[in-house]
Length: 82
Image (cartoon, rainbow, N blue to C red):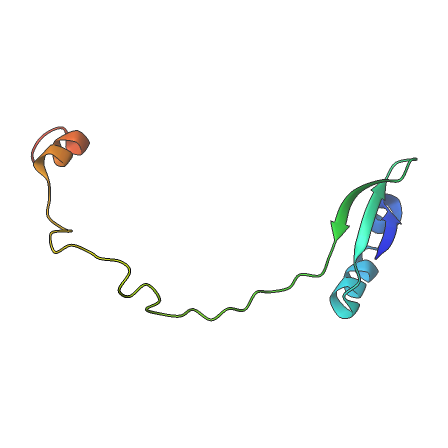
């Protein structure tokens, strides 16, 4: 992990991004005369998880009347019967 001043970071952005991408380097960005650490640039790691279909099978129950309309609910949403 390297600490780098904002001015140098701005001037060398392309080479810093290349180091992060190719070498996995991490940079801490410092700001001001006191070199206050304000941000960190780390390599992006894409999370590759395969979706597993059917993982909620048997845990979720959809009732047979799921699509039935309720007059009271329709009145609340639409103001009257459709």
